[in-house]
Structures are given as C-alpha cells and as structure tokens.
Length: 346
Image (tube, rainbow, N blue to C red):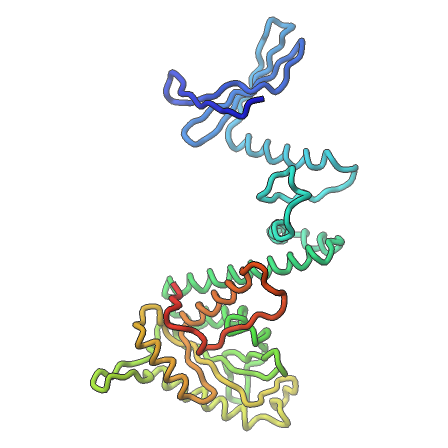
C-alpha cells in the first residue's frame, strides 16, 4: 500500500479528489473509499461494488464531521480490541493510539486533568490504583493548569483596565502563591482588631507567622515626579496606603498576646510585614522603577509593588514550575524587591 496521495482538480473545478483507496476486495465484493476536498474541508464517499450483481454500486457519503467522529471511534475501539473483556476508560491524547503504552507520564497526566472537568470522572479515578509516579505527574499538571489559568485571568483584568478592587481581591484570595512561595493559603480571618480589617493575611511556611496584604486600585498613582529636584516621591494615594499599613502593623503588635492574635490563637502575628499592591508600572521608564526600588528600601516592614509586578511574580512562579528537570521540593518565591525593571510584564 502506497503512502503517496495525489490531489487533483475535478473538471468542475469546484472540488478536488484523489485516487480510490481499497478497503476490501474479494471474489464477490469490493469496497473503496473515494476522498474529496473542498477547500480545506475533507469529505469522502464509500462505494460498495457487488461483483455478483454486475458490479452494482451502493454509496455512502460522509462529511468531514462524520469522518472525524468515525476516526475517533475507530481509534478507541482498536485500543480496546487488544484488551481482555471489561470496562475501559479510554483517554484521548495527542499521541498516536498505537503508542498509548509508551506515552510519557506528563502526557497521560494532562489527559486525565482534562477529564477531571467531566462530572463523575474524579470520583472514578480516585478508586483506581494509578501508582505513585502518575499521581505525582497528575498533581504537577493540575498545579500547572491552575497557575496558567491564574496568570491568564490576571493578564486579562489588567489588559481590560478593570479598576474594580473586588476583582483583584478575589484573585489574590484564590492565588496567594503569587506573593511568593514562602506563603501558604491565606487565612479566612481578616479582622486584626474589633474595628480593623485587612485585605489578606498570609501565613508563612516557616513558623506560620502572618504578613498582611493591602490592595488598592490599579488605576491609582504610585509615584510623582519632582522635576525641580529630579526625584520621585510617593503619590497621595500611595502615602495614604503606607500610613494605613503602618497603623495596621501597630494594631497587630498591640493586639498580640503571647505571640498570637486575641481570640485567634492559631494566627501568629509576630513582627509582621505589609505589602501594598497599587497602580500600574508596565509603561514606566527605568528611572521610575529604580526610584520605587529605592523608596521601598527606605521603608521598614512595608513594601509597595504594582499589579504589573504582581503579574511578573506570578509568571516567574509559572516559569519555574514549567522548567524541565525541576525538583519537586519547594520553589523559591519572589519577594517584592526581587523584581527587576527589565522584566516587562507584557
């Protein structure tokens, strides 16, 4: 059987065709597949010739969607045909069906991760003995999917120039890892006193000590330029946020009783730090990034980053997770001052 395919134009010039493909031939019966091409669309006709009836013909025409469906079903059933009787979960992958047994673990994990969106599949897989290797690969792929989706979501919010603080509050609550892998999942608790609530309390891996995050509008100004003295200084919105965090840190210090917040002994607030997320910096010149870095260094226990810096940190974490041959141990996360000006977030 030749692998050469010749596509020729029909006399009508509205359709192309290629040579008939013999599917079956016997003393009484011949079956051929006639491929047709209309632009980039593929259709086919299956013709059955009855030799005993003077080569009478029976034809079945299949459109491209039906042909794809036929291909998918044949691929699945050919795999099952080599197995013993039983119930099978057939996973479609990007690889050849004949190579299913030789697929790498990450390919299988991606296929299973896609299936987990189907109702009932997760419960079924939980009862299977998939082995430690495939489970580790599956956990990695699911984590990568979460990170990719999170980065895409934040990117879209910023590109659409959404200024709704609640949108970013929700994103940060779901993806606190973007502030660095030194942190674990944020606390549901937000009250640090009877009258004060912070946007986020993030526990650190080491000791569970809490840091706080204060979110401001992404369309707020961060730095002003004093052209007469050739320096940048905090904007009014940023100065207000810094003063607010200074008070929060004082309140947390005064509320601490033997190392934890009153009425919440599990929350350890010992020498906490605060991170303010405010404004945009994707179009800043180098000297403005440098000024922010310098001003941050002069603050004590408070750092200011923009939403573009937060996005850059999230992307860096994703890049580290996607890097080949990476250890499964903790990934070193970024802190606010680790971001360099030449790392454009867009």
